[in-house]
Length: 113
Length: 118
Image (cartoon, rainbow over all chains, first blue to last red; front, side, top):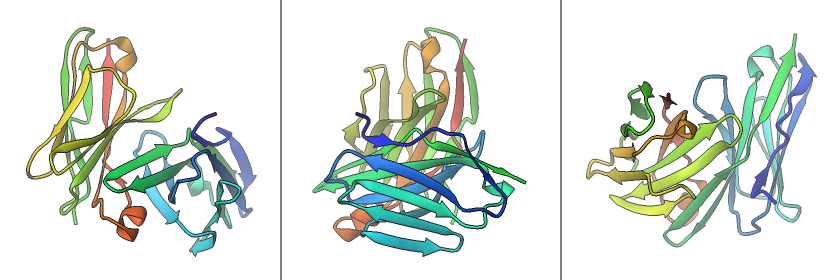
């Protein structure tokens, strides 16, 4: 079982629709969860992070965390063609001086005009 | 505030050679992590340096090494290059706080170094 699992896609949604990106993780001790967007040929850029159960909204983006189910998701409302990219889920665990960040393979999102 | 910088941006090497990549973190960030990204494997963690000490290491052979300087700049070295080392090498910096700051501390990525091994 991979530590962080994402469906590699592609996930295709029409412009204006809600895109739902999902991520599951195996380590129950994981404490914070990050979503990055990566355009082809570019480096990952942070969208948002979440560490408490529930929803966190930032503009058109909503991150959802359910620690009991070891599941985190990213919703993109009113999807635009410019949102077409690969979305990486990252899971972090810290303990004393130890820190580990693990990335999923990423989900490729295609927003169709 | 300037972002994370990496040099060089592109490198072409031949098998058996060695290469050194450089990363300058965001000002005030003392942690630098290195990742290898390939299409099939995604982002694979190489190692993390904090306060000039390697704090964590991924599952890579000893040909991959790194170091961090007192100004937090970091270098990564790959010796005896193999074809499979062709990848995008990314570094990410963070403040690496403690407690809640450590939990919410965010990594910011540089533009990467594209290494091609022929």
